[in-house]
Length: 244
View 1 (cartoon, rainbow, N blue to C red):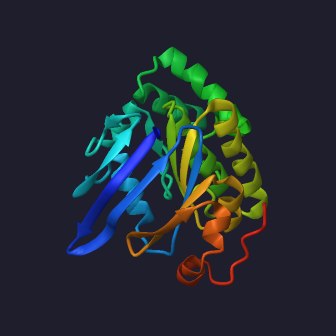
View 2: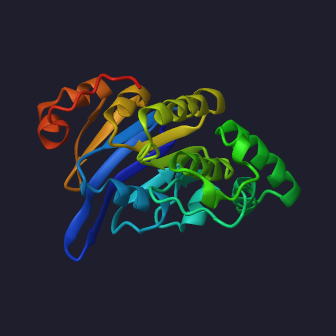
Protein backbone atom coordinates (compact mmCIF):
# COMPACT_ATOMS: atom_id res chain seq x y z
CA UNK A 1 0.00 0.00 0.00
CA UNK A 2 1.21 3.49 -0.81
CA UNK A 3 1.82 5.98 1.99
CA UNK A 4 -0.06 8.73 0.14
CA UNK A 5 -2.99 7.96 -2.16
CA UNK A 6 -4.87 10.65 -4.09
CA UNK A 7 -7.94 9.43 -5.93
CA UNK A 8 -9.98 11.34 -8.52
CA UNK A 9 -9.51 14.71 -6.85
CA UNK A 10 -11.27 17.63 -8.54
CA UNK A 11 -11.87 21.31 -7.81
CA UNK A 12 -13.51 24.05 -9.87
CA UNK A 13 -13.47 27.81 -9.45
CA UNK A 14 -16.24 29.79 -11.11
CA UNK A 15 -16.95 26.93 -13.45
CA UNK A 16 -13.31 26.39 -14.45
CA UNK A 17 -11.81 23.05 -13.43
CA UNK A 18 -8.44 23.87 -11.90
CA UNK A 19 -7.87 20.23 -10.93
CA UNK A 20 -9.82 17.61 -12.85
CA UNK A 21 -10.00 13.96 -11.74
CA UNK A 22 -6.35 13.69 -10.62
CA UNK A 23 -5.06 10.45 -9.09
CA UNK A 24 -1.60 9.37 -7.98
CA UNK A 25 0.18 7.19 -5.41
CA UNK A 26 3.39 7.83 -3.50
CA UNK A 27 5.21 4.94 -1.86
CA UNK A 28 6.92 5.47 1.48
CA UNK A 29 10.48 6.70 1.09
CA UNK A 30 10.06 7.67 -2.55
CA UNK A 31 10.21 11.01 -4.36
CA UNK A 32 7.49 12.14 -6.76
CA UNK A 33 8.07 15.15 -8.99
CA UNK A 34 5.09 17.08 -10.35
CA UNK A 35 5.60 19.17 -13.47
CA UNK A 36 3.49 21.07 -15.97
CA UNK A 37 3.09 24.47 -17.59
CA UNK A 38 2.01 27.53 -15.63
CA UNK A 39 -1.69 27.27 -14.82
CA UNK A 40 -1.66 23.47 -15.02
CA UNK A 41 -3.08 23.16 -11.49
CA UNK A 42 0.05 22.11 -9.61
CA UNK A 43 -0.23 24.47 -6.65
CA UNK A 44 -3.99 23.98 -6.48
CA UNK A 45 -3.38 20.24 -6.29
CA UNK A 46 -0.99 20.82 -3.38
CA UNK A 47 -3.62 22.97 -1.68
CA UNK A 48 -6.18 20.18 -2.05
CA UNK A 49 -3.85 17.50 -0.74
CA UNK A 50 -2.58 19.60 2.18
CA UNK A 51 -6.00 20.82 3.32
CA UNK A 52 -5.88 24.48 2.29
CA UNK A 53 -8.76 23.81 -0.12
CA UNK A 54 -11.42 21.10 0.16
CA UNK A 55 -11.86 18.85 -2.89
CA UNK A 56 -15.26 18.88 -4.52
CA UNK A 57 -14.69 15.27 -5.48
CA UNK A 58 -12.17 12.57 -4.73
CA UNK A 59 -10.23 11.44 -1.68
CA UNK A 60 -6.82 11.92 -0.04
CA UNK A 61 -5.55 9.02 2.07
CA UNK A 62 -2.43 9.11 4.23
CA UNK A 63 -1.13 5.79 5.57
CA UNK A 64 -4.57 4.25 5.13
CA UNK A 65 -6.41 7.12 6.83
CA UNK A 66 -8.86 9.24 4.89
CA UNK A 67 -7.82 12.86 5.49
CA UNK A 68 -9.96 14.43 2.76
CA UNK A 69 -11.12 17.87 3.84
CA UNK A 70 -8.95 17.99 6.95
CA UNK A 71 -7.76 21.46 7.92
CA UNK A 72 -4.04 22.07 7.29
CA UNK A 73 -3.08 21.69 10.96
CA UNK A 74 -4.93 18.37 11.09
CA UNK A 75 -3.14 17.21 7.95
CA UNK A 76 0.17 18.20 9.58
CA UNK A 77 -0.74 16.28 12.72
CA UNK A 78 -1.46 13.26 10.54
CA UNK A 79 2.09 13.47 9.19
CA UNK A 80 2.06 15.59 6.01
CA UNK A 81 3.45 19.12 5.76
CA UNK A 82 3.93 21.50 2.86
CA UNK A 83 6.16 24.44 2.03
CA UNK A 84 5.11 27.51 0.06
CA UNK A 85 6.46 29.40 -2.94
CA UNK A 86 6.05 32.68 -1.07
CA UNK A 87 7.96 32.46 2.20
CA UNK A 88 6.36 34.27 5.12
CA UNK A 89 8.49 33.73 8.22
CA UNK A 90 8.13 35.80 11.38
CA UNK A 91 10.53 38.50 10.22
CA UNK A 92 11.04 40.16 13.58
CA UNK A 93 12.33 37.05 15.36
CA UNK A 94 15.43 34.95 14.81
CA UNK A 95 15.86 32.03 12.47
CA UNK A 96 16.09 29.71 15.47
CA UNK A 97 12.91 31.09 17.01
CA UNK A 98 11.03 30.67 13.72
CA UNK A 99 11.86 26.98 13.69
CA UNK A 100 11.15 26.55 17.40
CA UNK A 101 7.67 28.06 16.96
CA UNK A 102 6.95 25.48 14.26
CA UNK A 103 8.11 22.70 16.54
CA UNK A 104 5.91 23.94 19.39
CA UNK A 105 2.95 24.16 17.03
CA UNK A 106 3.47 20.44 16.44
CA UNK A 107 3.21 19.75 20.16
CA UNK A 108 6.87 19.86 21.22
CA UNK A 109 7.55 21.46 24.60
CA UNK A 110 9.31 24.83 24.65
CA UNK A 111 12.53 23.34 26.02
CA UNK A 112 12.61 20.46 23.56
CA UNK A 113 11.55 22.73 20.71
CA UNK A 114 14.62 24.91 21.17
CA UNK A 115 16.92 21.90 21.07
CA UNK A 116 15.17 20.41 18.07
CA UNK A 117 15.21 23.76 16.27
CA UNK A 118 18.95 24.14 16.81
CA UNK A 119 19.58 20.73 15.26
CA UNK A 120 17.32 21.44 12.28
CA UNK A 121 18.85 24.87 11.66
CA UNK A 122 22.27 23.24 11.45
CA UNK A 123 20.92 20.44 9.28
CA UNK A 124 19.59 22.83 6.63
CA UNK A 125 22.74 24.94 6.60
CA UNK A 126 21.49 28.01 8.47
CA UNK A 127 23.76 27.69 11.50
CA UNK A 128 25.60 30.95 10.99
CA UNK A 129 22.29 32.84 10.74
CA UNK A 130 20.51 31.11 13.61
CA UNK A 131 20.42 34.16 15.89
CA UNK A 132 19.71 36.75 13.18
CA UNK A 133 16.28 38.08 12.33
CA UNK A 134 14.80 36.09 9.47
CA UNK A 135 13.92 39.32 7.67
CA UNK A 136 17.61 39.70 6.87
CA UNK A 137 17.97 36.39 5.06
CA UNK A 138 18.63 36.25 1.31
CA UNK A 139 16.29 34.24 -0.92
CA UNK A 140 18.38 31.08 -0.55
CA UNK A 141 18.26 31.43 3.23
CA UNK A 142 14.50 31.98 3.24
CA UNK A 143 14.04 28.83 1.17
CA UNK A 144 16.08 26.88 3.70
CA UNK A 145 14.14 28.42 6.58
CA UNK A 146 10.85 27.41 4.96
CA UNK A 147 12.17 23.88 4.72
CA UNK A 148 13.43 23.96 8.32
CA UNK A 149 10.05 25.06 9.65
CA UNK A 150 8.38 22.20 7.79
CA UNK A 151 10.90 19.68 9.14
CA UNK A 152 10.25 20.90 12.69
CA UNK A 153 6.77 19.38 12.43
CA UNK A 154 8.42 15.96 11.88
CA UNK A 155 6.57 15.05 8.67
CA UNK A 156 6.42 11.63 7.09
CA UNK A 157 5.42 13.25 3.81
CA UNK A 158 6.84 16.62 2.77
CA UNK A 159 5.19 18.60 -0.03
CA UNK A 160 7.63 21.08 -1.57
CA UNK A 161 6.24 23.85 -3.77
CA UNK A 162 9.08 25.12 -6.00
CA UNK A 163 11.68 24.95 -3.26
CA UNK A 164 14.43 25.72 -5.82
CA UNK A 165 12.73 28.70 -7.47
CA UNK A 166 14.79 31.89 -7.38
CA UNK A 167 18.03 30.09 -6.55
CA UNK A 168 21.18 30.16 -8.65
CA UNK A 169 22.60 26.83 -9.87
CA UNK A 170 25.26 27.07 -7.17
CA UNK A 171 22.59 27.58 -4.50
CA UNK A 172 20.44 24.73 -5.83
CA UNK A 173 23.06 22.01 -5.51
CA UNK A 174 23.24 21.88 -1.67
CA UNK A 175 19.45 22.03 -1.38
CA UNK A 176 19.12 19.03 -3.69
CA UNK A 177 21.75 17.21 -1.62
CA UNK A 178 19.73 17.99 1.50
CA UNK A 179 16.54 16.62 -0.06
CA UNK A 180 18.35 13.44 -1.05
CA UNK A 181 19.62 13.09 2.52
CA UNK A 182 16.16 13.61 4.00
CA UNK A 183 14.94 10.66 1.98
CA UNK A 184 18.00 8.43 2.48
CA UNK A 185 18.80 9.20 6.12
CA UNK A 186 15.48 10.31 7.61
CA UNK A 187 13.05 8.29 5.52
CA UNK A 188 10.99 11.34 4.57
CA UNK A 189 8.73 10.83 1.56
CA UNK A 190 8.90 13.80 -0.82
CA UNK A 191 6.44 15.23 -3.33
CA UNK A 192 7.70 18.32 -5.10
CA UNK A 193 6.46 20.75 -7.71
CA UNK A 194 9.31 22.09 -9.77
CA UNK A 195 10.06 23.80 -13.10
CA UNK A 196 13.79 23.10 -13.03
CA UNK A 197 13.95 19.89 -15.04
CA UNK A 198 17.52 19.09 -14.05
CA UNK A 199 16.30 18.78 -10.45
CA UNK A 200 13.28 16.71 -11.48
CA UNK A 201 15.51 14.31 -13.39
CA UNK A 202 18.00 14.00 -10.55
CA UNK A 203 15.63 13.66 -7.60
CA UNK A 204 12.48 11.93 -8.82
CA UNK A 205 11.70 8.24 -8.73
CA UNK A 206 8.57 9.03 -10.74
CA UNK A 207 7.04 12.09 -12.35
CA UNK A 208 3.44 13.25 -12.70
CA UNK A 209 2.68 15.65 -15.55
CA UNK A 210 -0.30 18.00 -15.27
CA UNK A 211 -1.80 19.97 -18.14
CA UNK A 212 -4.96 22.06 -17.87
CA UNK A 213 -5.79 20.49 -14.53
CA UNK A 214 -5.60 16.88 -15.71
CA UNK A 215 -2.94 14.18 -15.60
CA UNK A 216 -1.23 14.16 -18.98
CA UNK A 217 0.91 11.17 -18.05
CA UNK A 218 3.03 9.66 -15.28
CA UNK A 219 6.11 7.48 -15.30
CA UNK A 220 9.84 7.48 -14.72
CA UNK A 221 11.73 10.73 -15.42
CA UNK A 222 13.12 9.19 -18.62
CA UNK A 223 9.71 8.05 -19.82
CA UNK A 224 8.13 11.41 -19.12
CA UNK A 225 10.80 13.56 -20.73
CA UNK A 226 10.83 11.47 -23.90
CA UNK A 227 7.05 11.42 -24.36
CA UNK A 228 5.93 13.51 -27.36
CA UNK A 229 2.85 14.79 -25.50
CA UNK A 230 4.96 16.14 -22.65
CA UNK A 231 7.48 17.68 -25.02
CA UNK A 232 4.69 19.44 -26.91
CA UNK A 233 2.76 20.60 -23.85
CA UNK A 234 5.62 21.58 -21.59
CA UNK A 235 9.23 20.73 -22.30
CA UNK A 236 9.71 22.01 -25.83
CA UNK A 237 13.41 22.01 -26.55
CA UNK A 238 14.52 22.49 -22.93
CA UNK A 239 17.50 20.28 -22.06
CA UNK A 240 16.75 17.80 -19.28
CA UNK A 241 20.00 15.93 -18.79
CA UNK A 242 21.89 18.40 -16.59
CA UNK A 243 22.44 16.99 -13.10
CA UNK A 244 23.14 20.20 -11.17
